Image (cartoon, rainbow, N blue to C red; front, side, top):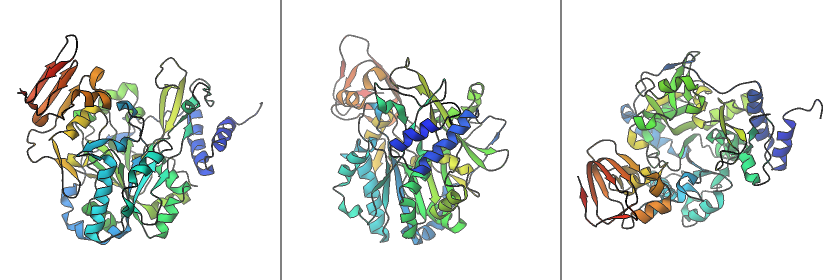
Length: 462
């Protein structure tokens, strides 16, 4: 149609899918930025490396203050992921990790422990996707004490994928689900608003939101940080940790030359600057995706901005069918929730120890979590074992045989090996491990013959 607004087709598609007007206007904002030629890139000319951050270990004096405002806090877990990279088809948080407990079990028990200890009504909320909601609700059924009169979740939105060639909505009749994508976890602010959850939390005088990924078992509410946020009236606070070689592709913190802090993701880095992006001595601080948000300030900023936060845009180019590189290229327009650090005046970041960042992105991470490298404390925190004395552990399992959860279980049928004294474990080939295997130091185990190699019970690799 001559003179038609290019966004009209997107708006019609989103309305027919039942998306709320604010979500549509938010997507319109990013689409117009895309049409204007914006790639979302942040160059080294735009930023300066961040030299130092305040350290959580310096906040011991704020613990009592944190305890005094715990009744104004809420725990929010991002729970929309399916763990498809590990072969899962349900919520990743339902994966068994320790002693028959899932990520979600441990999170619930952490919250219930804090409630009992401090005699407060600390709500737990999940930001679910349509694909994780039902399974997660079923998993929460054994915990009736969680109910404090609030819904247990709110839903993340979805947005249309954009054809890379002509910037129109992609049509994919073979699988219409492929026409949509999540808008990144930066959608949490819009979803809190459109679901009515933000208004409900504020009506209950809940002011401080502790937000983290459901697969990060190190992210437990810390009263020192809560007390510091309350005492210093910090509107937005990001937990960051020292970058290691394992974090080279992860988002890092920097300081904008125009003022304020900024989060830069790898998708925002120009190709010719990737080496500097990945230089962990230049950009020292890694975003753990654990945040502390003042909800009253959030409501005010949303109101001031017409309900569109206008976070830095991430433009991801992918095939419309993620499993088929030959399918048409699309843009997925996303935002990161940590990017709000550049939106809130007075936003801060704090350096935390590595033990507050224990994510599970691959089966390599999961094997470490299953093993004696970690222990579960009485308050259901997952922390490095006291016997762990050799620093960071690197596990590199052959993706041909260990990438999926079912493959990992098949090859460790009697449980994980002892890795408490292991620095590096590299496995190549189809190898099935017996029970009570011990791995120490820097070990490579290889097998190239026909059929699997079976490691006997009690074998020691040193």
